[in-house]
Length: 76
Image (tube, rainbow, N blue to C red; front, side, top):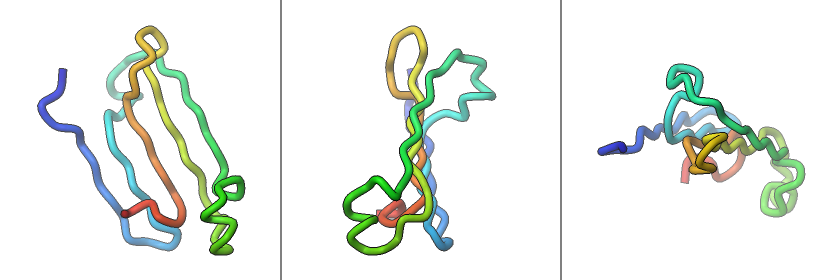
C-alpha cells in the first residue's frame, strides 16, 4: 500500500510527533481515538500533562492510518 510512512517531529513545547496519512486528504472514513496526556502515567509523573495522543484507524479495515502525540516523549 505505501512504500514509506510519512513521519515528522516538531521540537516545540510540548513537542509534537506525527506519522501516517493525512486522513482528510485521503477521503477514507476513519475512526479517531483521543486520549489526554493527563491520563498518561509518565506525563503525570513528570508533571507535564499538557497535550494528547490521537490514533486514526480505517473505519472498514480497522488498520491504523496515522497517529499524533502532542506532549512529553512525542519526539522520541
